[in-house]
Image (tube, rainbow, N blue to C red; front, top):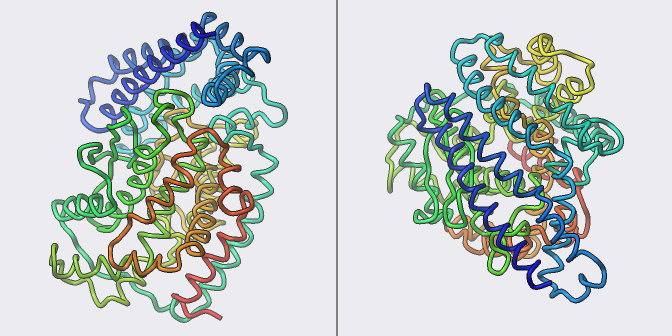
Length: 503
């Protein structure tokens, strides 16, 4: 048994190291890599992906795991080892279904597709990207056949990001969520304050925006000797190693606070990555988030419940106006706070207001489901996108960049990913609701710019659980219940009815 334990821990460390290399290649591609480096990068990325996959599915690794998982051996293991072996057994059994050639093909296809997606956006030409998307969808259907989780084909995709989640559960939750969000939006649109709201004329140059982002990262407690912030087309977070987390943002001159909120959002991911259970679990399958919904709960929590909180702006406003940045034309505090939290149905998901955000996610979920189910094809996608977003939000894209090409996820083959944004938003509201109850001084601390108690609480209740528990189990452990969109709806109603002076 000792030989088997030594082998599985050593191999997990190797896999973790190669995964860091893969993440570094991906980060470089999306930030600094010269455009013409794409073909060689696709070869590099696919090679690393194959090496990782072949290590995971090797017969030797599997035989050691099976040996340790046998009841008479398993019972003799320490608790830590039992947790690792149990998780490994489930993960590796699933991975062994997938041929290495498939991983290689998917990696090459998506690496090249990302470059095509960027090119298509720049040239406003969907046809540049659509052939790549067709290949990816074909591969994802093939993947569903390989994994073969019962029920809808899409179950095999969502399970990679939110273990145990199914199409039936998502449709039930999202149908309720769509109805309630639409009702809230209709009521707010009837309020006089909504009818009379105006955008503020605020301009912040690129250099100043970057300075603000660096400032806020330091205030939130993201250590600069364990992280860095760069610029990319689509903001993202990636972990290169346990002390090396990279985040990116994007500077928009016509939306000067986009970089701020995307930075706070990605900082939530980064704080989680740096805080995730390590110690004796470092470089094991347990030192990870149990789901992307849980991961997204951290970014949505920091972006919205903290970053758009009135107490946060009481802390931050003086820095913008006087102490650090001396930005003119911000208006008085009340006007700026209302502007930051303005409900304004828009085209772009990552720029969407807090109330309408999940409607963007539901739109993508429905389209993905229809693509995978062969109810629609890739050529129909732009038109269906435009029709559906118009029905949901009353807006219509003028360009592909504003519509079907706005997200990078499909270029990476990440079908099943989008629902986790809504799941994470619901989890975030549940976490915030609980945190307010256990810490009545929460808003006072936020107003003082003291975020350490928040991070410590998250660390004790979420970060240090790693994958020992599932996302549902963590939320139930914290809140006494699993996913509950009613908490999220009540949070939105209480906040936005107050802002818009609705009855």
